[in-house]
Amino acid sequence: MRGLTIQRRCDIATSTRLNAQIRAPQLRVIDPDGKQLGVMSRSEALHIAQDMELDLIEISPNADPPVCKIADWGKYNYQKTKQAQKNRKTAKSLEMKQMRFGLKIGDHDLMVKTKKVISFLSHTFLQGSRAGSQRHWLRSGQTLHRQPR
Image 1 (cartoon, one colour):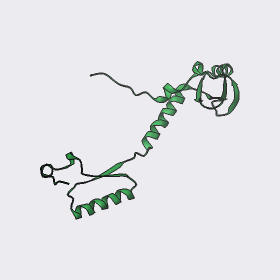
Image 2: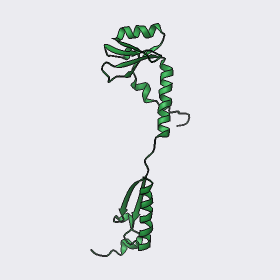
Image 3: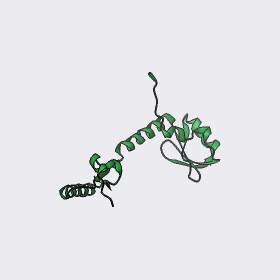
Image 4: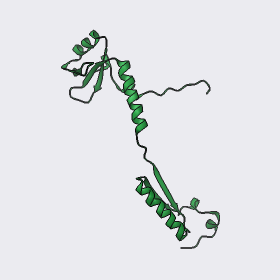
């Protein structure tokens, strides 16, 4: 698949309604400076946005009435995309540390692994531990010479 480029789309562009896509009859409108213009009909809000040569962007569709802002769509989308990238970059990823214990582990090895588990817990990692009871965790000689239960 040479020469094929795949572009990642931002969820903001597909989930935000603009201008005529807005369906609510009454809207709470905010101007480009952040000042509230009040609750008005959709047609009034669209008319004001067209007079300013800007777009009517639905910011909070679940509010009652929905909140819309008069702004430039390109600038708004750029800012929201950059904010989403920044949030993804600074998000703390949850790291899972895991410790496996074999069936025939020695006392010293068990103590060393226990100390490692305690250090993982002190650094707030998620911790999981498993005892080697599954067949693929056993070494080759251990599978041949199993002791009966």
